[in-house]
Length: 251
Image (cartoon, rainbow, N blue to C red):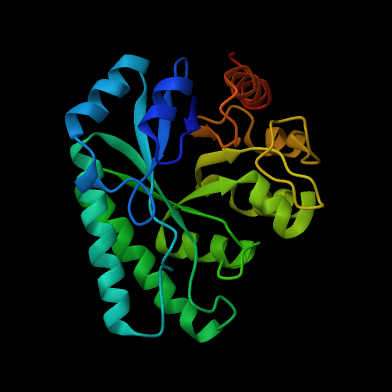
C-alpha cells in the first residue's frame, strides 16, 4: 500500500507538505492547475525534491456525460488531452468524479457508461489508470450503488472516497459499498466527516467508522490519499499513520 496526499492545484503546497508521502495527487485542468501554465521540468524537480510519485485529479467543473452528443465528445477529447499530458509527466492514476447532468435520469446512465469507458481507454493509451470517484452526496453525483454497478460493467477501477460515502449514506453506505464492490477499489480518499456537514477533517475528528474500512480492505495494496484540508503537516502525517494502522498490517 502506498500512502499519498492530495495537494490541490498548488506546487507550493506540494513542496511544503508532501515530504514523507509516497505520492501526491495534484488537481489539473479547468479551475485548477492547467498543463499549459506549468513547466513540466519544475513539476518533476518538485516531485524529486520530496521523493514522491504523481497521481492527478481530473477537473470536476464539467460533468462526465450530458444528453448532448457533441458536448460528450468534447468532454472526452478534453479529458483525453489532460490524460495524455499526465502520462508524459509520469502520473500513475487519474481520479474522475462520477457525475452526469441528471444522475437520476436512468435512461442516460448507459451514456455515462460509454463516456466512462472512453475516458478510461484514453487513460490506458496514456499509461494512466483512471479511477472513478463516488460523489453521490453532490447534486450531480451518481448514487453509490449505481456507480458500483457501472464501474463493474465497464471494468473501471474505483476511487472510493470514504468521507463522501459517509455524507451520502452514513456508515451504512460505506459498509454496503465495500461489501459489494471492494474488489474494484484501487484508490482511496481518506478523511473524516461529521453529520452536520463538516468534512475533510483529520482522521479521528469525525464520525466515520474506519473499522468498517479496515474489515473490508485489510491488507489493501492500492493507493491511499489523505484528503484533509489543512497544511498542518503533523495533522496530515497523523491521518496517514491512522490510515496505515487500519489498512496495512505490515506497518
